[in-house]
Each structure stands twice: as structure tokens, then as C-alpha cells.
Length: 485
Image (cartoon, rainbow, N blue to C red; front, side, top):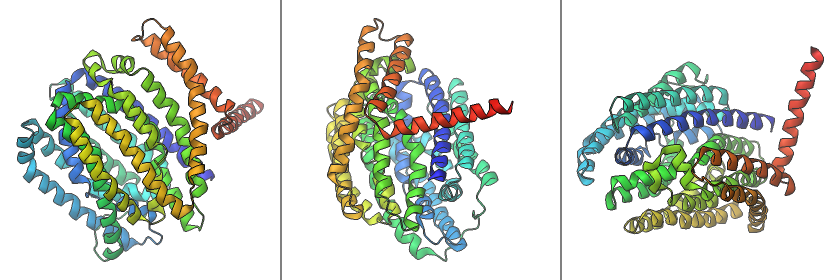
């Protein structure tokens, strides 16, 4: 438990460093690039990501969940990734003109060309990072991620400032991938291998095939909004949707991306030691939704002021979709650990079945909604996450006996906590006259933070106990240092 807490602490520090870098870069780039330029890059990166779904063949997750990991299995994992990633790079270069013509936008051709370069670094990055995650070596991961993020931000800002437009974002991705490889080589785990092999293919191919199909379906569903808006509405509309979704996903980046790297290794370690993950799973959902719901409620309360202060007036049309996406991601909070849980239990087939059922519905509904406007596309995401919650609960109930009453108990407690937190926050927001001022944002956010902490103790949330313990440890260390002096 101590090692998991330590890993989570380092992972949170890592992601908050990345958040500061990304947040600062996004604010600057929002003033250097137009909505249309953001839209062109969005289509290009989505297309590349769709093809990249099979780039590492699920190798990172395979390395983490494999019970008996040998040198040959690591080399074989690298060999498979080399073939898939480099083949995809060639396919993208051959298809770029067709894709650009489909969207009637020549700039997409350039974006795809540049992004294809990053695929040549992916195989080595996947194995190095996967092994570091398996061994919970998050200090080294933090250094790699921070260096990579800095390279991305600085490249994007410098190129955008010098008039490279949408291509500045593409070159930033290449810079990030190259930096990850260079720093990763220096900080790699002792198990890391850079000589490919193909001797241990059977187990890897089975897991990789299931994982790749499941990930591919998920990515296609996730990307259907961007692709449909870019085709059926406009690049400018896609820019607005991308920026609005980006505001909501700040929390997803700040919390989900910090917790997810730790969850799969810790679940896998528990299962390797014969321990059920039910208690850890429910506790994780409780903690996650405790943090998620008040935060999404704050964003939903004041989307226009937040977008205006962060990105400027040219992005105002992104604000209507923010509250809708906040509702969608609030539902996601109740199933956010379902996929890593299924992977850790080596039930990748169940994860695949879920994607086969739900993603075709999501894609069809999103395409239909895109003809009517951005709000309708955002609304489809609420339906999607509700259906995903139902399906994942079905399998988790069967595998680890997670009951509906246990999920409902978590839900009701955190609804109460959110109401207590948001009451004073909403009052403060409506009392401030200039609702687009920085003063309003600071004041309302401060009231929210105080109300949130108070709500934790009023509802006797487990996080309140964690806060007490943390404060006591800090005070004890401080007193110890004073006595030594």
C-alpha cells in the first residue's frame, strides 16, 4: 500500500508539472493560432491517431500484465512493435493525399507527413515506458514526461510565433517523441531491450490482437466527433469543439492521466499475489468521483468566463458545449477504472465485447448529430458514457461481485458532497458583478476550494481522513526539524 501511495504521489506531481506546461502553452497558442488552424491540425492528428491505434499492438499493457516476463518476451514485444509502427508510417504517407482531398484541405497533407515521422520513435518508447510502469518506477517516468512536454511546448510556441501555423503543432509532436526516446534511453529500466526478436509471438499476438481491436474501436468512437464535425460542419466549428472539450479534459489530464499509469500495475500486482481487486476498485471509484464531480460542476457553472480569461474572445463559441461535456465526463468517473481492471484480470476479451457493442452505436449517433450542431454531438457523449457504465458494471459484477448497491452508495454520497460544495460557489459567482474578470475566477475558485474541503469533512468522505493523516505527517516532520535545530 505504501509503494502504491508513493507511486500515486509521484504520478500526481508528474501530471501537475505537465498540466502547468500544457496549460501555459495552450493559453499562448490560443492567441497565436486561429480556430481554423487548430481545426486543420485536429483532423490531421485524429487521422494519425486512428491509424496509430495498432502502432504498439498493446505492448505496453502486455508488458505490465504478463505474469512471467522474460528477456525473449520483451525482445519479441519490441519486434512486433517495430513492424506495426513503421508499416503504419508508410501507409500514412501513401494515403495522405486521399485524406486531404476528402476534407478539401491541403494543410492536412502536411500535418500527416510531419506526424508520420514520430512513428519511427514509438516502438522503443513503448517498451521503455511499459517496463518502467510495470516496476512502478514513476520517478524516472516523471523526468521523461516533463522533458518531453517541455520539448513539445517550446517547439510549438517558437514555430507558431514565427508563422508556421498548424504545422507548428505537428513538429511539436515529433520533438516530443524524439525527446522521450533520448531521455528514455538514459533512464531505461535494466530489463529494457533494443534488439528485436520474434521467438515468443503466440501469447503476445493473442493479447495484442484483442487489445488492438478494443483500442481501435474505442479510438474510432472517440474520434468520430472530430471527424464528423470537420466534414459536416467546418474546420472552424471543429476548432471550437476541440477547445471546449480541451477545457473539460483539463481535469481528465490532471487526475485521470495521473492515476491511470498506477492503476493497471497495482491491479496486476494484486492479482499476481492472489488478492481480489474489488476493494481497491471501489475505493478508486469513490476517490475519483469525489474529486471529479465538484470540479466538473465548477466548470459547468461558468464556462464562458473561463474560456474568455484563458483563451480570449475568439473562442466564445466553444462555451455552450462545456456544461454538456461536464455531464458526460461525470458519468465516466464511475467507470474510469473498468478497462484497466479487466486488463489486469486478463479479461481482454470482455473489454473487446464491450467495444463491439457500444462503439458502432456511438459512431452512428455522433455522425447523425453532427448535422445539427456542436451541442448535439456533445450530448451523444452523455448517452455513450451511460451505456458504457451499464456494460462494464455487468462484467465487473460477474468477475469481482461489484454490486449495483455499492455503486449507488458511492453515487449518492458524492452527489451530496457536490451539492454542499457548489451551493456557496454558485452564490459567490452570481454576486460578483463582472463575471468575466480574473477577480471573479480567483474569488469563485477560492470559495469552491474551501467549500470542497468543508464538504469532505461534513460528509465524512475517506479523503478527509487522508488529508488529516497528511497534515499530521507534515506537522510532525516540521516539529522534528525544529527540535533538531
